[in-house]
Image 1 (cartoon, one colour):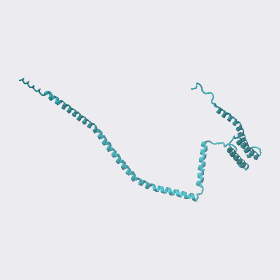
Image 2 (tube, rainbow, N blue to C red; image 1 turned 120 degrees about the horizontal axis):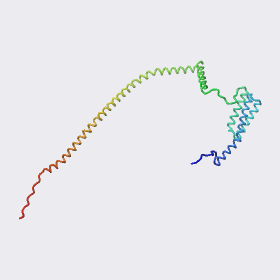
Image 3 (tube, helix red, strand yellow; image 1 turned 180 degrees about the vertical axis):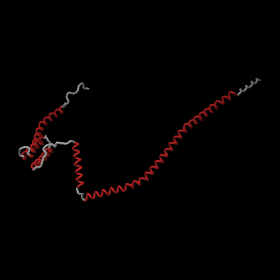
Image 4 (cartoon, helix red, strand yellow; image 1 turned 30 degrees about the vertical axis):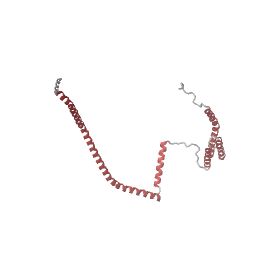
Length: 240
């Protein structure tokens, strides 16, 4: 375990240090080309809409050339360069045609709550306009079909309720019978539980009586043997 925190948090291995040097060198090459392309694109748009002096076609050509140089050097992707050239050309042509063109990022002047409120207002206005507009034949047909469907649903609801009533009654009867059966089973279980101690006591009494009888039977032969008189010995016969 280290006794002090690490003081160096950068690259340590030779390969990582080489990547750091490469990235710094590539940044020195790529950054000026990216910045120049962005500056020339903005200038071409400003000239096209009349905010700056110059020839719009010359500025457009310079911006396209800068984008090509940046893509060739690897500062930007070739597809990105093609996309930016296409967008720039369309905007310049639209501006020269008298169409208003946005030159920078659109700044939101309202917050999220105000934007949501405005969106709801636009949706409501659109629905109101559609409701006031004359209805077409297709719209009338759809409305009639929807109304017919609602009518059929309303008619089918009472019959479905009536059909479900017998089923509900049968279910209730079955449930009551099941409840009664459960109650009878519970009563039988309680009765069995009440009889169990009495049966156990009777069994215990019978066992004690049997043990006492066996003890008495074992003692009886011993008592008879003790009470029986001793037989007299026969006298010895005289020798002839």
